[in-house]
Length: 262
Image 1 (cartoon, rainbow, N blue to C red):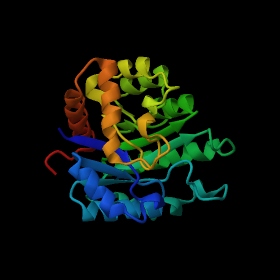
Image 2: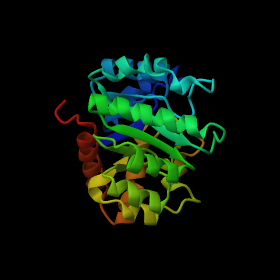
Image 3: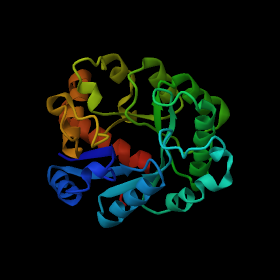
Image 4: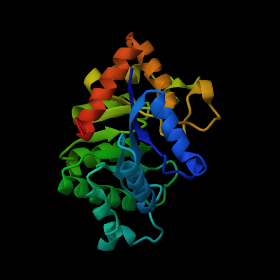
């Protein structure tokens, strides 16, 4: 049984001391494909370096809403994406992301977040690559941009999808994939209605490691082997076997990131 961790951050400093050992360990545990997600220029560069080093790792490149450079005018400057654009052209970069809107941590620059989000969707469209969306406390504006402002031509995924039924309904209508992480296992989570809303051909699993460790290991540094716990939770809710969830999400991730046979 093999698993695909569709969103991780082995480019995070929390892996600085034992990154290679952990990556080798999770591969031996059956996590045979991993996407390492960038969230600014430097993390995107490191994601590419890891993708070049390991055949089973792929990268994304993007500037998240929580990693915008300071300065109110920056998103309007053409130079903002000058360093990101060539990185996104790399053959092992499978998507532009993570990008999006976050009104939980950043309430004062909503218009600038929207502008940067749109610019990066344009970049993805120019490169014929999908997008990886981070959306927190910004459901209405995220959907409005995707429906009414700019179409993501190659689609994409809502990573660590908020447990919001209306968001999922709208995202699925737009053709997006929905990815779930360890937070669906938390004692306070009520993910059943949301997960049941996602068709099997649109569901992905992820860890978002080193963050969001599942309930059974909460408080520990997360890593890709714990994606099995996410798969098991989905299997329980959908009344499926974990082997079936592993196979479905693996194939879905290959298709969405266009890495079949690569």
